[in-house]
Image (cartoon, rainbow, N blue to C red):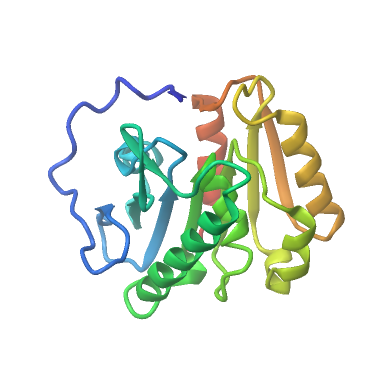
Length: 227
């Protein structure tokens, strides 16, 4: 993976902490002011929570908490949410169950789902759709970067109906060497035809996140974030 921000942060900020009561290991950045808004971030295969510790500083929302989750299984020097096809479905279901338990704990008292965002890259993008569209509570927004879906038609059948009208943003690189752009585009178009309200944005990039993209995502969050 290539990230434009790699050189930005060499040490973690002093106010970083963790939410030990959750079933998934994590890194937590508390908001700079009292708030029940939360952004939950999911990395890709071989990644880790530390990959996204640049997000709080870059987005710079003083009223937003940030929770970066580690996937449950090790993979090379990082973690993975599920295995390789064709043995991936069991892992997706297991990851979705762990996310359900995590979200239920988060939104029981401490945070407000209606003011929170789910942000996923690669495998995390798939889970943003597969889990986010089925989860019982509607979030303020869903952001899926450089990912594919497992089964768009099945998702349309099983999703919570009101999720179609939620705020969805999906981005993908036309030069993505890991997850084919045309496949992602067809899958999103299938969801759009099925009634999903999704903004789809393409970029001249590989399997990565670039600065132009993150600037657009930040503006999209602002437009969907409740004061």
